[in-house]
Length: 374
Image 1 (cartoon, rainbow, N blue to C red):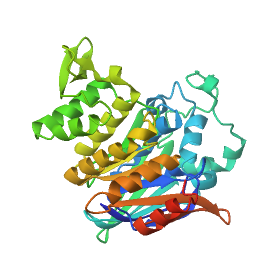
Image 2: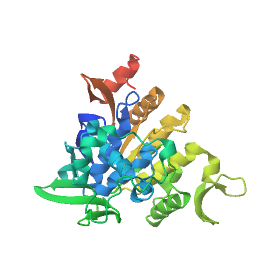
Image 3: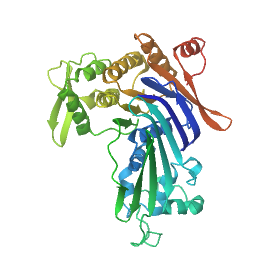
Image 4: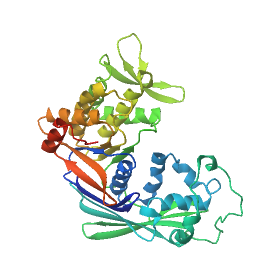
């Protein structure tokens, strides 16, 4: 579990520090203040050694990661643009630094650097326009600076990882042959999942996650939380259908009902709890926690999240714009034996994004007096 995290030169952040982290952490703030970017930064740090994780961030930005691997679909300038967008101010001459302290690995730092042709291309990036929706998927003319077969390491992103005084380097190389990391990185120190508000995980993937919990007799924690939205729910079953498997629920009407038929809120909450259960001693990051959920159920939802996180010892980071969501979270954790919750509000200060952390007392006082905490 993270106790401290710092990010420098990533996306919109020049430098941001978070301390006093809890089991469950809620990130608030106005639009375009970096809530999603903070989740992305933590996710990259969780992955530790693998620079290819940068490509998995693109669905958060409505850009499909698999397109990046197809040189015949994406022009090289567009690939460069997407990688440059990781760096604050698109300045790839500076490194991205992610530093964290957690109870599994201790102090661990991650440095991402643009190297090779990616760094050399920075000088002319200012003249490159942002790819618009109509351009995505369009095959450009072959004359547009596609790398020759003699070019080695056309685009490269290096990760330098330091843990327990030991440094290791891994390099992601993108060329005409695709994407590869050299040397092959080891598995991350703990499991982490990144879940956005727009992209549904495939139903068969949802069934696999549930099956993993069944193997360890942990499926009841999912049922307990989902009953918050559907009190009639008696059990959850995996049903094989044409094209895969879908989770169904027994709500006492004489037949099983597919989970998606029960509503978007049910699917969103199921995804979150399934990820928490499948990341014991790990981290789950979820954007817009209350998306698809009515404010009246949020107290019970937070109680369910607290239960699932506590049972799996899974740290949760999530975001919201809602005052009702923040209030419900505070009340839910205040009703627990231990208040294992923190609100972190991001905001602009002197041209930089900074965080203000609210513990139980500060948040209680702010809510009581109607102070702005979103």
